[in-house]
Amino acid sequence: MKIKTDEITSVIKQEIKNFASQLEISEVGQVVEVGDGIARVYGLGKVMAGELLEFQTQSGKTVTGLTMNLEQDTVGAALFGDTDLIREGDTVKATGRILEVPVGPEMLGRVVDPLGVAVDGGPVIRASGTRKVDIVAPGIAARQPVKEPLQFGIKAVDSMIPVGRGQRELVIGDRKTGKTAVCLDCIINQKQYWGTPEAVVCIYVAVGQKDSTVAGVVETLRKNGAMDYTIVVNAGSSSPAPLQYIAPYSGCAMGEYFMWQGKEGKTPKHVLVVYDDLSKQAVAYRELSLLLRRPPGREAYPGDVFYLHSRLLERATKLSNENGGGSLTALPIIETQEGDVSAYIPTNVISITDGQIYLQPELFSAGVRPAINVGISVSRVGGNAQIKAMKEVAGSLRLDLAAYRELEAFAQLGTELDASSQRQLDRGARMVELLKQGQFTPFTVIDQCISIFSASKGFLDDVALTRVTAFEKGLLEYFQGPGKALRDQLSEKKSFKGLEDQFGAAIKAFKATFK
Image 1 (spheres, rainbow, N blue to C red):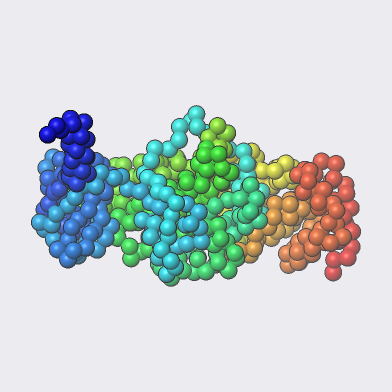
Image 2: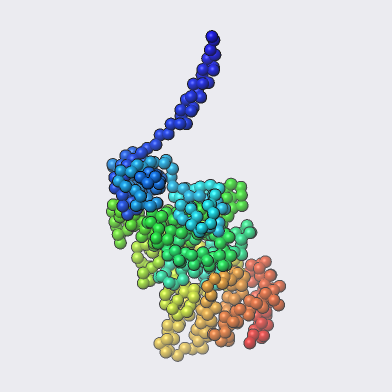
């Protein structure tokens, strides 16, 4: 009987192939200590920092953990599941995978936890892909300067503290001064671009908030039709510290999927991520670090707490045209204690970001809302992030308001003012009144330009202070009716050049009819 050698070879090859697929080599360790959301594991010699671990519990359930400390004999891991299930001696398996979250258009309109699991009671999300949660930010060569405006729809912000697509603008202030409201206004204002190439995908990351507060935010967004283009990532105050720590990175990774679409030949998307708030993330990270026995530094925060926020906010960028030209804008929120902006975490984040919007409790109490302090608030992108018409009318606005505040303090002393100072005081008071704005009522940039034009050219000087809001409302309605042709011209040109006289005449014509 003659046996063909090639037949034997093929059988052996097949056997080897099957053997390789059946054999699974895993690195396995044991839990030596567990408690407070932290586990110490012995026996994982080849595990990577940031690698996912699987804890096999005695109840049969698997709990996920994240490698954070690589020590001489043990590994310190933060736990994402129910820590009560884990016992000393339980088996731990290294997965070889770095922490990832599901990403894709399927996430839009959903409320998810930091691991991308739906928590809104809706169907399971079948995402089109995953992205690593913690990555290195794009380098300088991959970026381009920030020059496209990201419209907030808030007159005080768009005129004096303009934010560009790809910028990092800090929103800072004491609790209950309207920080979240400013960011929600910005998300709601993006509705006007949805369905156009200018569309902005919004991601709201809630860290350490009450679940009832987050439910209120989701309801507000839904009511205003903004949930269609928004993802809400919720790591509530009841969530374990490890989830609060990774939530901002997860939200950022979900946004980066849309930002990099242009690189893949699709339409690049612009993304806005609101981190509400990073002071609570820093507290969660401090808790983890102290439990992992990392040495505490200033205010008991670990030494790398600056790196915690810098590596997150550096990921906000305007990509170069070769990379598709997408952008990711970050609005981190930081809560101050008694207005102390010189504390550790506020100064850290101020030095990382490209400007800040400072909300003052005194202004809020005085009824100036949004309660933006124009003196301390700044945008380091400035006029680059404004349309020409806004630059023309808002150029002197900040200085005028600062001068008004000084004059107001002087006038309170009971000093008699000369006529020009009195005029300046009257105009400043009307400008402050004009910049007040109701919550969730964003203005289009053209309407903002018309409003500020009318005030800066002195058309409001003789309007009673209590009638300023009514005058503005009537004026904008007039430009939707009889003055629509002129408004359309401004929309097209995006500049008042050659239109000042016509606008002046139109405002006078409206003023004659204003009762």
